[in-house]
Length: 256
Image (cartoon, rainbow, N blue to C red):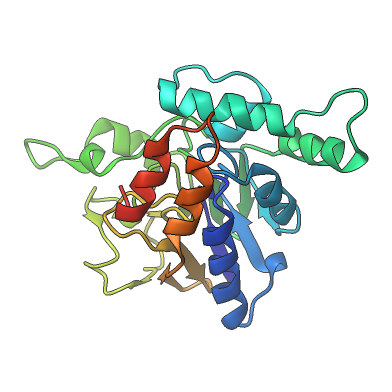
């Protein structure tokens, strides 16, 4: 069984809460697949990167890529956070060995990984770090399957686990987006059918539920998990960092 997480966004409290729940299911950090965005937005980038180094798989998200390279196409709020994270993570001549190891890990993150007929990617098989697969992409005025969805499904064989949108759900080949609520929190894989599973966000949910979100997958069933943590504590840290916009902390309270 795997625990599949994404979009930690330097939210240590949410990550620790998710890992505690993962361990309560009988798993360890060695059973975790992370779909990227370890950094971006939150107050604890170094701590979250250090924890992620112990995961079974860890991929590169667009914020990880931006911290290592450049924040192209980011809004001002996100860009300011990326710049601050880079200042906290990038080593210089006299930096500690630990800081250099952390930076090298972040730089080395792969964009995709396939294990046991499951494709893992942050954004989309067409553009691993940047492309969003949104609920609205599944809609068509004539009730047909949109070209974008058809093309994405053509890029993988069976299952594709993604993050990036912070909006959990399952998309079938018929282009229907099913929320965890629609599914009562569980989805059984149909053999021979393809599905996209968005695992939601641990560190910054945006589906109206401020609890950390991740999924458990045993090869047959996807189970969505929502974990209580104290977003107010993370928010207070953000408010104490001048380089981070207060709105980043405010949105944690509302899951938006």
